[in-house]
Image 1 (cartoon, rainbow, N blue to C red):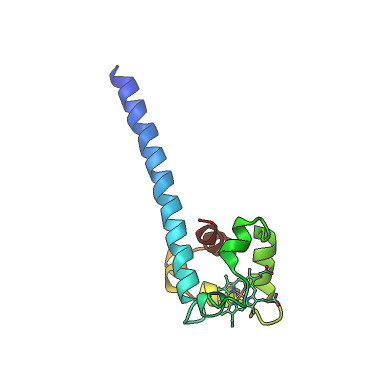
Image 2: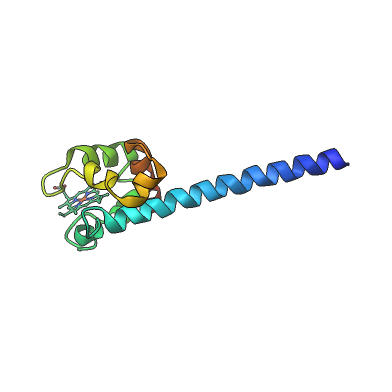
Length: 111
Ligand code: HEC
């Protein structure tokens, strides 16, 4: 009995920390969106004539591979963004790699 309770508590703890990790990732993704380039991605992307990232992702028209490629290389009026993303305070503080930072902002935009 005691042993199974301990196991249950362990499972609950793992589930909780998994949740906290996911929340942390989304939070950092939002910070990237709001702060990269000083004014954030929204300075351009919240203007209706520019690509609407959340809608594109939800519609299945912007997968993570394409997203990552545009971030790393830029595309026409879209500046190369990886350096600006890596310079965001919470990204540095979390010690994220480039791929982790891209995952975080993609995850934020997917929600
Ligand atoms: C200076 C304005 C500007 C800023 C800042 C900006 N973008 Fe963009 N972005 C654009 C424009 C314009 C396009 C469309 C480029 C094209 O397809 O010709 C674009 C395209 C994209 C695309 C490709 C969409 C597609 O379907 O091809 C992604 C992904 C993207 N931006 C992500 C971001 C993220 C994430 C940030 C913040 C880190 C950001 N952008 C900041 C202007 C900007």
